[in-house]
Length: 450
Image (cartoon, rainbow, N blue to C red; front, side):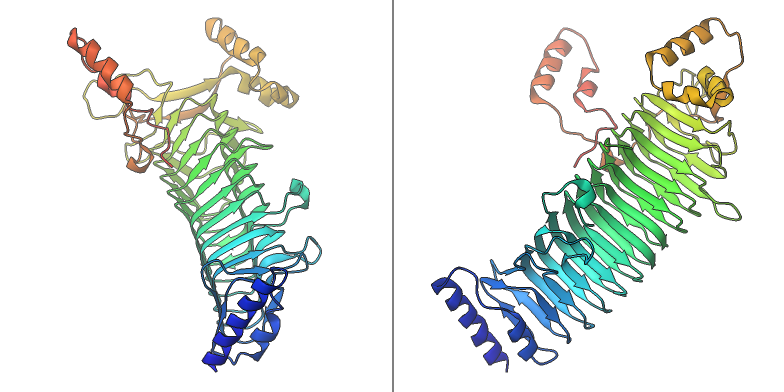
């Protein structure tokens, strides 16, 4: 039977070359294949195709399944199907029917080494427990943002692994009602939400790059989420948030670069209460319009070992004063570019606490509508005048008892390449007795190597 399947695939290639360039339907070939067999695609074949039995659908070099602009290109309705080494293109355009590159509605499916082009939704997985998705690249249809489909939609699917997935110009990577899954090495650009969690418990986000979206990642109503080793870069479209949490418990945010966003970190009711706690450590928060925004319902978080550098506004609290988060732990606080204290004993910790004071925060707590002026020249002028003539007490936004005097930037975020021209100029200056210039050849610590 395997010989017959191979012969049929060759026949599809021959007809494609002699005819219009697109071979006859693949559906009959898949329907004829026994469970457990392998169907090989060569050249360009016509879809859509529905797989209703466990089998392998694989492509040779250059293999394409063209959906013809109708429905979902490959629809998997059986467990333990394997789809690999194919380009899937030209799905339908109906949001109501969720036309996609691939739909999976069964457990144990493996998708790998796929390219999805001109598709409305990318991967639509529903009750696809234990699915494995790796090395998949996708791009959407040229549609306005409100007409696009999700790059990945994961719905009621448990223990799913997504790794090495690239999404360009789609809507969201969306997780609804999933547990114990893993997102690893995602790259999402030019979309709405790079990653959007909804009730996605114990699902880590690891080593991913979310760049140039409206929101890098928004984690909502989820417990036990670990966010580690990611890059949230230049997410500046409305609302322009790098990493946001809403009503989530027991989150751990470690060793991430949150750089160049309108708002770096945004926390709303996180943790929700009870025994849930939030932990933010060893992150680089730099070059954002606002480094971190904490609503008044944000309590019980610990911030330690983080770097806050070159943000237009370091930390902002909204909805009233809130000092119930800890900005240090076990004698280790954070690094602040506005800290001017000394470290006389050389232990790496400042001898005096760091206090971030904002006079405008006191005004905004009294007159909430004045917050529309945040970031304006009027507020900057008020801050300077209030420092010179303190007519009313400032609001202490942050108090760090153990501020760090050296920026503990994770090694993976350091860019150690040097400019040859700058090094030559430095050497020339050094020749006349100036030392230490070579350090300036390094890029700033918060610049991120991609």
